Image (cartoon, rainbow, N blue to C red; front, side):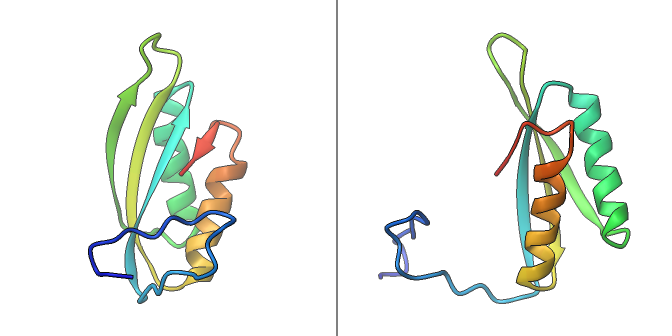
Amino acid sequence: MKNNEKLILDEACKTRPDIDYPTSWSYKLIGRDLDKLIACVKEIMKEVGDKKHTCSQGNTSKTGKFHAYNTTCTVDNEEERNKIFKYFETHEDVDMVM
């Protein structure tokens, strides 16, 4: 694979990307209540050790029903990255996490 090509991670992909840790990792949360998404990020970052993070509001759906909220933090290893993802994924106020 050339440096400028992107790796598509799906069922057909036979390789995993090499990620050098610690690294900055971003999560995009989708939910119905922006204030609850903001509270969710604060809650989870505190849960994983008062992790420093940055946040930004993403798009709102045309109907205003769904909101996106982005957060980025430094993760020390794959286990921590997946743990944070799982916390977001299972949180009652998050409909989707990417």
